[in-house]
Length: 313
Image (cartoon, rainbow, N blue to C red; front, side, top):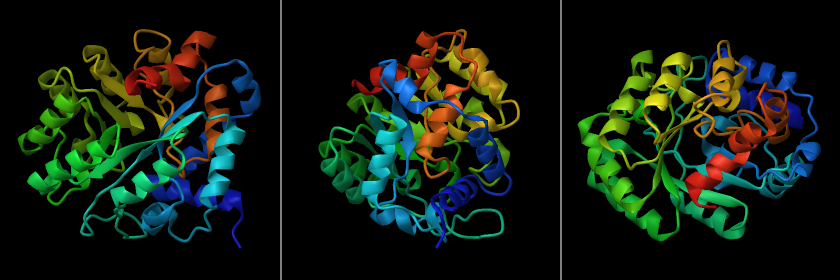
């Protein structure tokens, strides 16, 4: 039987692909903070990206070969970590899109009804972003509307792993962005070295162009475009509707620049997330507790206040 820690280590490697799981493990190893002590400060904590051990998520590559905890155990870990709210990001990727590495497995897809069921079970703790396949045209728009009526707060796209792969500013995606802007749905665009056939797909310029075109659209970027850290922060500086989520990439080379910018002009545009199971919840809290934020106020913004404003909490 795999231990809980074995599961988390494997989950980190699963999410990030070859080489990146070690970076996540290193980030966790740096944390030695007291998450309960952080909660005593009274700050709201919002984890902006989780993929919990529930139904369809268990069929994805994130959980391959793992012995995941029950959803009840996961919620207890949220309590232990001091996380008040968490955002479930759905995923819809076609079977033809596969990890580049030793697995060769599809990323996988999760029915949005599974997410809705879990949020209904824990309405005061969880929020929902619908997984959308941007390459499906009108069907994507219909699914967005269906999920909006179910109370979802936003949508999640992995355009670099579509069939065909798309850059985030591909004109074929504009009707999706137009609808989300009109309906005030937040759009999550996962971007990093692990997304897309090559690294052009994760360049921040694509999302900056998108932010310029749809100025009222709120865009969050899990993995925060790593390794394009300087360009990512510059794009966010130019676009106040763009929010960066470094999640477990905060432990990768060069990622301390996200903290430098959080201490400066991006204090309201950096968001905390564990990207569970890429990192354990307690491990993520402890890692961020050790980062060099310039003040408790800035730390509080990153850990929850920025997310609360974005999500209307």
